[in-house]
Image (cartoon, rainbow, N blue to C red; front, side, top):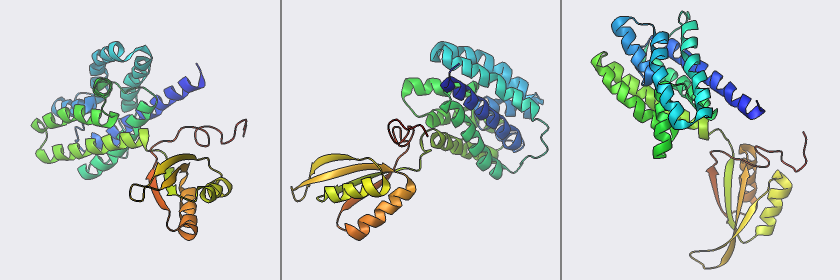
Length: 284
């Protein structure tokens, strides 16, 4: 097994563990049926005192088969791991001494931890089974993000929980799955503190020198024409980390105050200087 595959399986295990902890520490004590098979198991626990771990395991089995057929064998091996690992960890942490029964805190912190867990599993290209697998199927065929796919699937379960719980708890559960869906997208996409800097200038050589010599970043130059003046200009594109962007902003404000500059949050940056070594042949 190569390093990439090992990292993905590790992400699935860590993420599935967080999913289980969010359930036992926040969602079940707060009586929040926050979507998914965990929401179904919460309802059944409230009605019949059925073991949540066993309930989730039994329901997940047929859904796992759907994931195997639809999403491919590699995904489904990791889904199999998640399918077993979540109920296993729910069983191990069932008697955890510290729990939160306040529905407001359960919705906020349970939603965040659940979102971090599911987002980590998705980064490992896996699933925790249940409606998470169904959400991945929805994502594949609709093009929606993982977070919104999870929101749609879980919303159906949460709304149906109003039959067992009161309206107030159902509304808290809806807040929880919204927080979860946004956290999933943050974990998957917005993990970078880098900035995309767009500089439109007539003094390209001076600014290029500042970027190259002072913050040691590469750049791309695009020839442009001013829409108002019809004059030739240069747009410089540069990606830098947070501190470098702040430093460059100060330099431009002091030395080139008329330069048009846009700073954009970069969701994720791939390539040399970020996910690869900054210099060719670098081994440190």
